Length: 124
Image 1 (cartoon, rainbow, N blue to C red):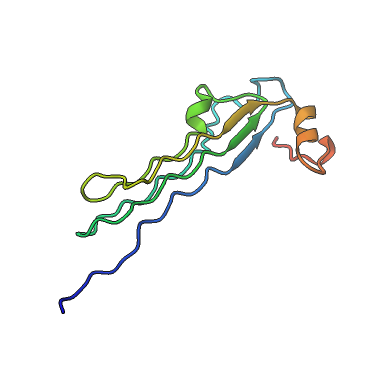
Image 2 (image 1 turned 120 degrees about the vertical axis):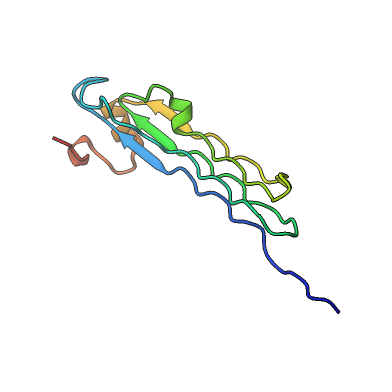
């Protein structure tokens, strides 16, 4: 009996996480120049000689803010699926896109369970 290669498929990408970014100084004031990324991670490739499944992409995260980046869908995009050595995805899929939505300070307080405007962090 010959040797047999044993292994698992590659790991999936991590989820994009959550970002809450608020400014009390108006929609665009105080947040200029900030880059936000809540993208899902890429699925792992599988480069074994014997093809096995690569990992699926992680789902995009959630971005709530008083202002949003120039390209909100890109900031919360799902991660790409990995591929096997032969270029096939073997059923692994890209992660689903996340959610980016503009919110006011008051709306964010109502959205965050148990939060009030008084307990939200302030950057100065």
